[in-house]
Length: 595
Image (cartoon, rainbow, N blue to C red; front, side, top):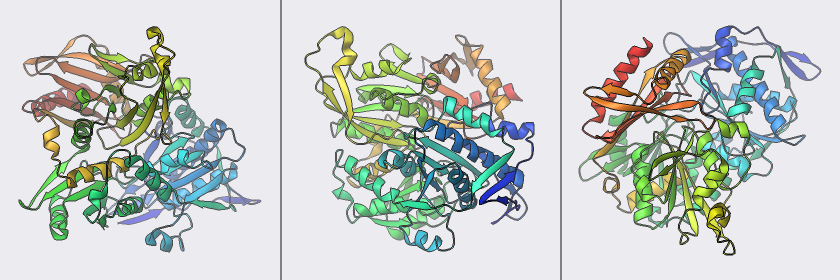
């Protein structure tokens, strides 16, 4: 592949780079300020694909990113009560990354930030920084956690488009907490980005270095020693296939527990293992290295797939995140006696719900999952951000919307008094997972049942991470596999899940949601069966996810506008023999609504 960019020219005015911006078209405005708010930062195409695998970055696309950079810098500084806040600025391994890091660093320096890069610790990084001073690579999970693991870091910015194609790039932002920004703050960034006529950047500035990867891995191993013994992994092999880059932070983590890490240095397009697996090549690699576990990851390492090689049968078995995390939770709960408060996004697998002492279901994205954790801990949350959350508690009577942080704290207070330490698992079907360990402090002097929420205090045993942090689960899952656990024994084989996506722009996404919102309480025919139409709402009452369910077959269907791409995502859980037919029928009917 060949990547080129159209040259742009800054004017040097007394040590400041000045770039004058052209006016925005309506289409450009919609990219920066979309009708459907993104679930995680901003993502846009930055390259135009041409013939013979050539990609060209026009200046108009660059200007969109620069506008977003300046808006993020200014809005974040308004949120942080420091004259010189610290920012960890990193990227994934996309071809546009170092160039964007350079421009963003100059903008942040102009606004008075102390800028930190990831210390070049692995051999590739050490060699690359000699010619690329803006090489600062990290996966999103380790980066976002660094905002709570380092006192000097107030803001984390990751330049990444996650699992999107190579011609995309984007930005994920974390201000003071490891929860992706959303709500009013995200809206302020989008709106402010439309107003600029120029971009200002400082030319000369000093960059500090932090080994955030090492700090994260120490944190991960400290948490995991509270969950299970990982000594089974010593001397074992694991095949690691990052779909872009080499994932040095995960190589280091697995090496720390004594594993022999075999890395596949081949980029994939699209860089998303949940939809793109080269099964013949993967089989050959696992057979060649005689390795039983392979882990496939997307560009910024927060989507995962496991492959198990059964040597005696010479067969490969693929496990997607939904099954992996369901089995892991059930094994830890049933076999290890670990009480896991199950906090999952609404489309995630429900087959671990019955084994958890408490289950929350939330909207898609860690901005919702992180709000459950932070509310339980009594941390303050920006009111508008909370109002746009989708937070539900599962009860014997069904889903109950949580309308305040206090309701979430009260739910934790219903845990049996025998539970003095609880493991909170935040997770989603695409691969994100985070474990937190909370001590439950009870006040024996207060026995007033009406004020049950005041009976406990939840105290985090470690700094609480509220974003995707699946490295913990990667080690646990690998250890469970090497210990001989069969995941099929811990999930109900009669229930299955599948998903699909219908292509749709923002206007069509809204049309679908508005159509079904107008039909709430009515029925939707799927073949010869009727599904009830309901919804999950934001706390402020806005419909966010459409829910179809059939009580006879115990089938649930969820669909929502994608916040990371041009489409409507459909998820279905129900009898294994029926869900493919249901999905096809529903997909065709929704397709007709927008065409």
